Length: 128
Image (cartoon, rainbow, N blue to C red; front, side, top):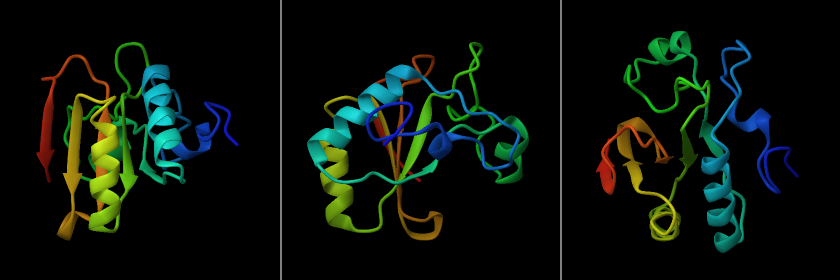
């Protein structure tokens, strides 16, 4: 059970550096919950909100949607995705709710990035 939605909690999305950054877009959580409802199985978030310090320490993009926006809200999550079959199912469902999806595999580890960042190009699907 979660405190952000039925299946997602603030603990899952908080910055791992212990800085306390843990505010995330309610729209993102709402859409993520809809994806979870359709999939009918757990979604494991590997990265949620990131403070600038932590984001820099992992050499991520400085304009990452994980970094809180001007309202203090993270706009992105990365979801663990270790098999091609699950990746296919997740992306197929996520496309119904998200306009920005990134797919990673290989050396970057298996994950799918979902975000609701309206300040960036919409209706895109990219690979890492």
